[in-house]
Amino acid sequence: MAASAWKSDFLTDEEKSIYQWQMWTEGVGEEGQLRLKNSTVLISRCGGLGSVVAYELAAAGVGRLVIAHAGNVKHSDLNRQLLMTHDWIGKPRVESIQRRLKELNPRLDVVTCNANMDSNLADKWVPEADICVGAAPLFEERLALNDACVRARKILVDCAMYDTEATLSTFAAGGKPCLRCLVPTPPEYWKREFPVFGATSGTVACMGAMEVIKSIVGFGESLVNQTLRFDLRNMDFRKFSIQNVELCELCR
Image (cartoon, rainbow, N blue to C red; front, side):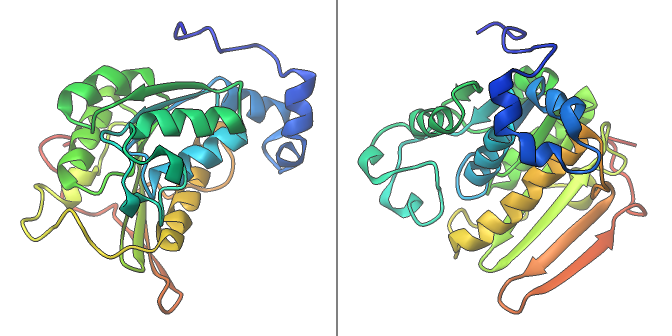
C-alpha cells in the first residue's frame, strides 16, 4: 500500500460508530479521531509490551502501524505476547501480529519487518512515522531507535519492564534530553531473559499507548521530560523529572 493510500479527509459512518465513545472524551472529537486515522506509529518489538501497544492503537483507530519484530513464535511467548497464538508456534511472529491486528481492525494498514531494530532499520522507518514506540528488551535496540528519533526529530515513547517493575518515558522530538542521556551505552549486567508477568508488561503498554494517543490528538498532559516508574508487587507509582540530566553529545 502506498504511504498515503490509507489517509482520508473524513471519517466514514462506520468509523464514527466504532469510535463514538472515545470521541466523547474532552479534547478528542471527530477532529482528534481523524488525526489518529491519518497517523503512522512505529513500534520496535511487538512482544509482551509492543503487542499490547499495537492492539490498543489498532483498536483506537490509528491508521498505520509499522512493526519490527524478528523470529518465530515460541511456547515461552504465550504468557504475555497477546498477538501470538498456540496454533502459530514455529511460524513468523510478524505474520501472527498482522493477522491478529487485521482481525481487530480491517481498515488498519500494517507494515511488518521480520527483523529487530538496528540503526539501518531505524533510519529507514523513523522518518515515515509520526511517533515511535520503543518496546524492545535489549538496550541496543532501544538506543538505535532513540538515536534515529533524535536525528529525525520524532517523539519517542519508551516502555520497559522487569519482573513486576516498569518504566515509561516520553522524549520530545529532537531529544533534549533523550534516552541516551540516561543510558549512554548498553549496561553489561542486562540479560536477554528475565522474569516477566504479562500483566506487568500489559500495564505499562496500555499507558504507553495512551501517551501515543495523547501526543497524536493533542489533549491531556504527556510524560515529556519525565519518567513514570512503578512496581505492581506493592502498587507503588512514582514520577521523576528528567529535565536536568546532562545532555549527551547526540542531542546537545
